[in-house]
Length: 201
Image 1 (cartoon, helix red, strand yellow):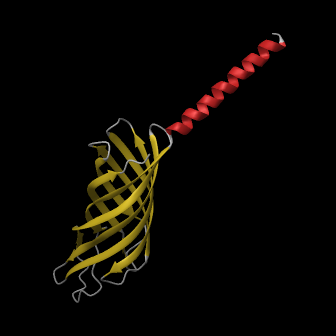
Image 2 (cartoon, rainbow, N blue to C red):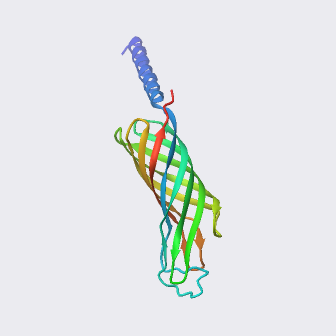
Image 3 (cartoon, rainbow, N blue to C red):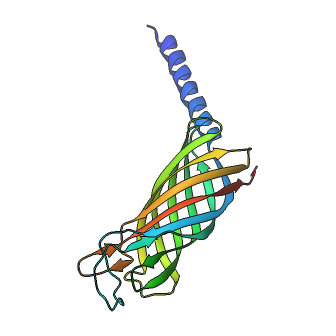
């Protein structure tokens, strides 16, 4: 192979690399959006008792689900055709109902949530997303054991149009919101809602 052919092949390789980098950058896009919907939340259950229960029976008392809301905004950073990194800031109203033979109590706790979602798009319509969330208590009607929660989110979404979509998610906290000496309760949240993504040129 002579020197001229080596130079030509080197130029072709550089051109392939250049156009490959150009196409990768061309795929990257950023679109802001809003999300909102309904929360169905409860605390984890078991053989627990409420600390103000005068009977102190330690019977099989339940922390049942309550309905509330969430609202927030996000920035969808599409890095490839199938992968989007989506940071979010959300306000999430949560809690649980407590029922026993002697006590009925409605626990309410609201969080400001900073989420980092990893979204994988398999078709133009369907996606699966998951990621961690760091949450800070901003409102409550009882003494929360920790003013911060670390949780993990798993969800799925469907794009109805280019801008409008619906999503279903489940979130599981790992920091006890109520912590007794022998048992603790963490957040569980099922959510359903809509998204609107803005076109940005």
